[in-house]
Image 1 (cartoon, rainbow, N blue to C red):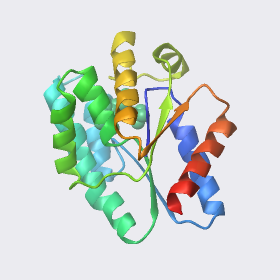
Image 2: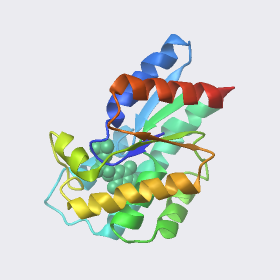
Image 3: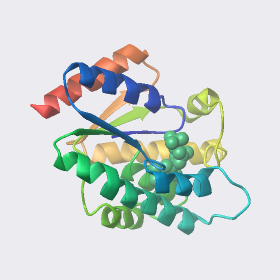
Length: 197
Ligand code: TMP
């Protein structure tokens, strides 16, 4: 899974890892949250791309969890059962960081909701692209509802990701997102290969 604050460069690295692994003859299933499925795209729109209806923090937490549950049952679980490699742009830890810590709903509460939603399936490897909030924000071309939160909110979120990495060293690698793109891609690939052995 790739995690990190907004503007960390996750999508670029998702593409790089996919290309690198395809060269190694791995079968890759790509997904993202929110919006990795057709139904999830509708939830993504409610969460990020509309101002017509109010979305409270609790609604937000449950909608992200609902999207994740759909993604798990329709995409991730079937792919893992076939022995494919799943690469995801965001997963549970985004909810812990954004809703649990950023929205102050409680990291443990949000983790419990999401774990339940995904039937306790945990990623083998999580890559945290660690970005400074101001740098991340300045890289964004289009800002969704969460991107428009304050710099303080994004700093809290980024710190929450770092704390998650410290708490789960067995599945986390933290990479400074300001490093050159190809250097990051190589680090990710080598970490993946070491895990796969
Ligand atoms: P993306 O633009 O990287 O796809 O992310 C969508 C936005 O949704 C981003 O600002 C982070 C946020 N988000 C949450 O707040 N909670 C979550 O659980 C997920 C997956 C994303």
